[in-house]
Amino acid sequence: MSLFSRLFGSKPSVEAKPTAKVVEYEGFRITPQPMKEAQGFRLCALIEKEVNGERKSHQLIRADTIADFETCADASIAKAKQMIDQQGERLL
Image 1 (cartoon, rainbow, N blue to C red):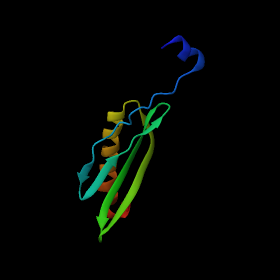
Image 2: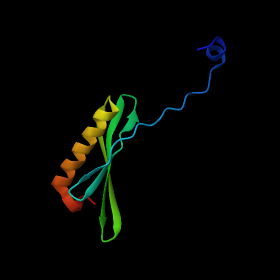
Image 3: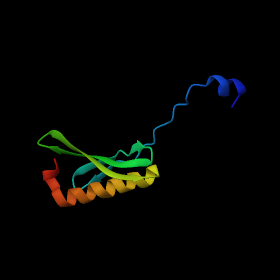
């Protein structure tokens, strides 16, 4: 970092937002969407299914935070699968 950048500041660099894989499970589509938090990433996923030609969705957000993006995305998928197994169509 140059002397002038340290004295006068510089534009913050734009961080590329990590992306996670979309998973199909029991007719549902799970898109993990870990939310950036101070402690890491909050467990979050979008659960979707097409019902009678209309796309229905449920936003899963948990209080759990995980330091690593990929680990959080995997945990989001696992939790979404658990909710689908427990609630099925009632989830939407």
